[in-house]
Length: 357
Image (cartoon, rainbow, N blue to C red; front, side):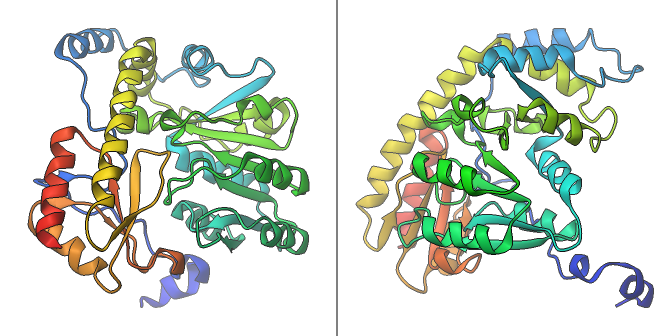
């Protein structure tokens, strides 16, 4: 290793592994929890016409006021809660952790969890602690409360629905965690479009609760737009960390346009939900395959012991790309994860998997 890198780059950063995104060109791409549907051609033309009105020579509105109003209206954000925007959820996670980082401070999350919680925690010098889920991927509430009491975390992250498992944790368990946490609790609702639950209604009750959302899973992943909802005093402090003009003019204009046509996006999510049910039913009929219940736009499934890597590669050889989670966490042994695609993509995946088995 370069001596200067060893001298100046913090050891916890050198120990990290960068977030890996595999090359996907030419594959049936079912590895990244994306919405597989594009817009109808007339809507694309209308969007492009809206973009022609954007002034690229000017900086974007730093507060993205119009977009915030659109988000508030579309998602029924509680009146007394504020909104903070980020370049994807990742930037908002980074803002939160940068704001509270300090010597001896820690972050806690049920695991397995979204990998960026740990990566960003380590990058800002915070101690990350994962509390294992139960064997059925439900919250281990006693263990979580014990970890909170012992470590006094500055931040607790909870995915709802859970990533990468897809299930919804018990609401009362999450409430208990919020009440026990000495710092803030961030409920990450990245997959809220595919379930009927949200903690928005709990915001007035818990000033230490922040809710993280994204438009990525709605079919707008290319925009890289996340938003954080919660107590105005908290968001005022976090806004001091935000880099100026972090939401581009093209993202603001495109998101405003897309959300003004929200019924189109909702129709796509309904189709994905229907395909999720069909896909789960089909997976359950395959020998050696155990799908887990999902309220997200993906399905986690376990295969015969020792075969995950082999089946992943066999699918890839047939032009189908999914996610191999074996080795990512002890609870995910022999697990693969498939994003719910179009009916045609899902059929291609099922045919390839039957051949691979």
